[in-house]
Length: 163
Image (cartoon, rainbow, N blue to C red):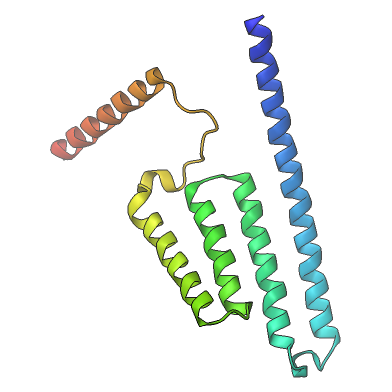
């Protein structure tokens, strides 16, 4: 019975990964189509940038596509760095194209500063590009990782001493 449950869990996990990849592919295709439509509308209308709100409209569309691409990247590789990049881009888009007041802009800027500080000081560099695992490591796994980390540090030190 336990074997069946483990096999079922693996099948479900593979199905979820496949579904995630399909969603990322569909999102990428939609974003590409939106980019083409936006560029065609800009170049087919010679007076596009002479309209009153043209630059703001352009920035909204392009930054929306950029955030969508960052989201697809997040779907494909869930890392702390990608999560922070998506959040930073979304807040930056709000600042650039939003029509909030000075207080809303100040709060947005403080949020970006906090995200950069989180990236710089709270997330170790080694973990920034390591994909997040869904499972919490078991005690045995943690012990193995810490022993491996110590062994790697010792071997690096021995290589440095040997040179």
